[in-house]
Image 1 (cartoon, rainbow, N blue to C red):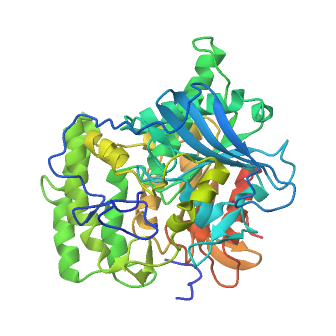
Image 2: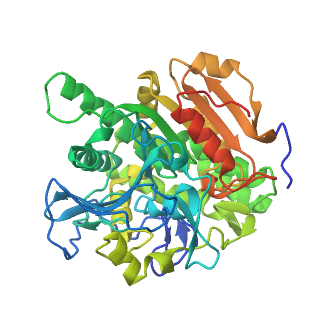
Length: 489
């Protein structure tokens, strides 16, 4: 419930089923579905390598002039070649202020299998796609106002990345991203950032990616420190997770709650709610299947839980509304698509992209669906990161159904960390931006949670009241990157 009442997208669809502004796939008409006849064996698909690779090195196009048009601000795009047949696409934008000393943040969109160009062009990058879908405008609330930003298309096969698509778990994705970052930090153009504070920011399936990547980076740092492995330590200080899927057992009841009683309007009929409620709570239903996944860890039980729960709960409870922004009918044309923009051949040549961009990779998504990674529990890893002293922010938009605040707040309430007691002693406070109430916030130690009023799944893409688009999200980001709790302005 809002203290102040407001005034009133995981992957895009598979190619045959386009969904605007989506990060969760639609498979056989089911949001987040599992393809029929899926096997437990990972599917590897090798795309033709369009250029000579340099395993263990970067291939870089500098200062293309695309997107970031602020005078004097450095940018670079290109590939980190993990091997001769695995190339990760990146796009780096220097901070608009004090780049040499500013922290470095990576941005990862979710899916699994969606491109982080979503975040770049629809949410928080130096430019934002216009409604005409063919041009961009400079974004005054870009996150490189406060940090050096590194957008990464991962795993291999996502977005502009190309090569053998063999990754099928968040843990494997973490390992490949670590390898990429080792290549990035070893490059003479970026080695100066090795000592700078480092952050992981992510959304949607990033509820798995963020905790898994951050915990893995800490583990690798420890192994470097004790001499077990060699490498460049990553100075991880901040983790941010927006509208994330972290702990399905805690979060799936949120679909029942949100569909019935969210800040705006019910999403479905009482009979649809009743069927979904039965599907969750009955013996052998969704709750029992997620618990079986947690207990056994078997790919078949976890994949089966994803199929059952998304068929019977997540997908039907969306009704006719856009799952990423419930104030709009499905599909919401906002944020506008940028596929045409990135499909321009001259632009691709200008930035050094070597393959046709796609918003999502069905191969990568299917690999994750086979392993059942979706229904695994990343909350223990999130707890590890919080307890390690990494400043952690979890945030959500209250107009997002697909990973709604009811589920996310239940996950947060179930965290067991050094700050749990303090967190539960807090009440939500109004969070203001430039004097305007914009959300609800709790801070406990180095952990913060904030619910944004009026925001859909891609929180930085939205505005609220008289604030400019992305202004509130930038305040959150700036405060967290400065090592501060989330405070009102």
